Length: 438
Image 1 (cartoon, rainbow, N blue to C red):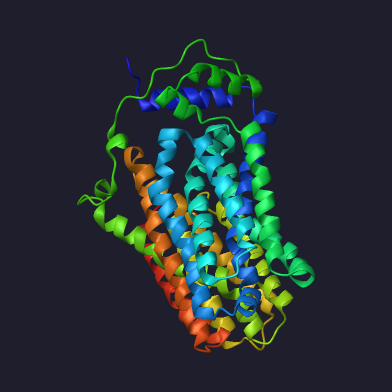
Image 2: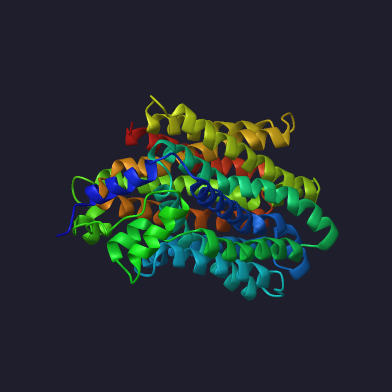
């Protein structure tokens, strides 16, 4: 007889909470963090190299904007349409396929000689990154004791800007010594090495094994439990009963009682993604166009993403006992104000400090939207709700870099770009305030 999802999930939590956290569980968390860091490096590698690629392959900025947007469109499509197949083939198998695709496409990018090759390979990279995130989050949360789960999720999320930050320190000397292809070679080889790491040390999702019951499910569950110093099971627990979760679709998010908040949430993600990915994609190029060196352009991206890491952790710490949506609104509106102030006083403000503050506020507030999305929807439609919010919001990640490329090709200054992209940031902050989530 099938048991309830709550009973099954409680059983998994009970098993994970016994005897504290083991070295095997810490290993899974560290691997997830490294994969997120590599994603941050892989996706922002194009930002580090845009100026050099443009000059080397004679590609104008508006066409480079298409390359940026293609990768981000791949992330959107991967999250919405490919990630759900992890429920069919398994979370671990999806991770292995995605890491292999990302690594291979990165290495091949270093050999590109034409725009169409860049577009295809960056689309593959984006599809891989977008497809693996849900599986990565699921496995990490399942193998983390409940009392550490919130901290772990925040830490894993911070891996993306942390990877982009550390990647900047790697990219700057590589660009000078070996040219732009070396950045893709280094990122691609590092990612391909993680295929073996995932294969050896990341077990299949316990929830997948219990729900889908593939051949040898009990043996696989017990093998994972023994490695984590947990007591093995004598038999498979009851499978979760079919619920609305199995029937959840985008239409279940647009019922009369959910429609207003759903559209509001999608709009908040959309506007936030526009400004975030414009900055992540074009900060190095804008800094170079303002008269500074290519290395300073890379370090501008490092400052923006480094501030983001601190902002994400700070928002997680500040959220306890406060209205989450109001706190996010303060961060996002603060980012819009800081972008406007920087554009107005660019000659009098230190560049790297300004970008770090903008990254702190923008990325800290943006990351909080993931938690807001999870709180808005009930359990039975939560995965669908979060997935579609992120997926549709990523359309803004496609728009931002593409429009930014057009503006840069038109000769717009860095300051004017910051004025323009502060507007969607302010709109995101106002919409976040109206979500009213604790």
